Length: 223
Image (cartoon, rainbow, N blue to C red):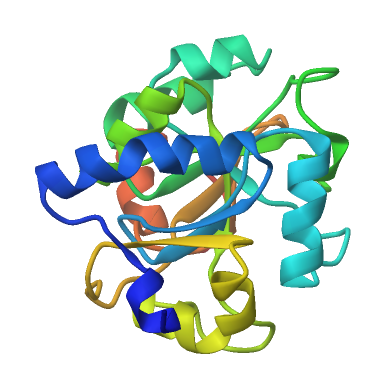
């Protein structure tokens, strides 16, 4: 079978339904999943140490750059022992589900240390991609997320780009690719640190800081 035929259709509701059982099994096996999001294609795994390390190896990721977590409900935050601060709650109420990632305190002993950033928190986003939401809800737990690309290359905007860049890993079953079509050009999610005394933009992205300040005037960073 050619690598091109190994992408799993993940577009229509029927395709999403059909893809979920084997995709969940793939995550339980600790392997890497490639999937569409509301911004770009991502790589992700289960939230456990061995699965996370497999993604670190695949991405050749330095220790100073952790992965974020994708959720599909606020209950997933509580189950990991993470805390929505007052500022984070305000931003989440206005912009979740959507392309904003919030760095939250907590998660000690429940989230692998490899996912904790230099700010001391864990980055979390409630995805607005319908198919991915359905998958995460069916799986029952968050999944990790990082852009699907080889180092120093642009993030993938289609399943075909992942198949081109990672043919051996796909053919060998280490990566399962969900094909949600070619995504429209988009900025990555905006990342806001909500661990410190004042909320701070640490990565500009799809939601401008000026828009975030409409609901949180104390926000600093990104002008």
